[in-house]
Image (cartoon, rainbow, N blue to C red):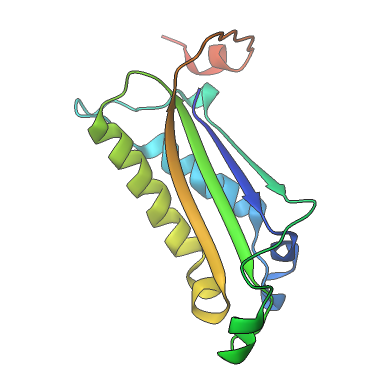
Length: 148
């Protein structure tokens, strides 16, 4: 059940030349980064069929001071923000939590390097472990990857 949900300001849905980000490419890169994480016994941490990355532009948003400080600094007032939260099932070690966070953050820093260098943007990567009070799964994906 590792689900990474990305919420972002809609001004990032522009072409890269206009300050946007390839969100589909970002989702694939983050999913691949999650699937590459290994635990202390060198086992894949997340099941391939259960790993999901979903990105949503915010229908409405307000970031910081609305652009005044960015304009004053010569960076422009078109602020952007990205919030990434991965939620995984309970029971993984602190080492695994750290590895997951570091893998996602490294991917984010690489994919947003140009953004971070040229515009005011805030990016949060958060890892949460869930305590499920109800957890039902219905999937025809897992059998694709659970072959002997």
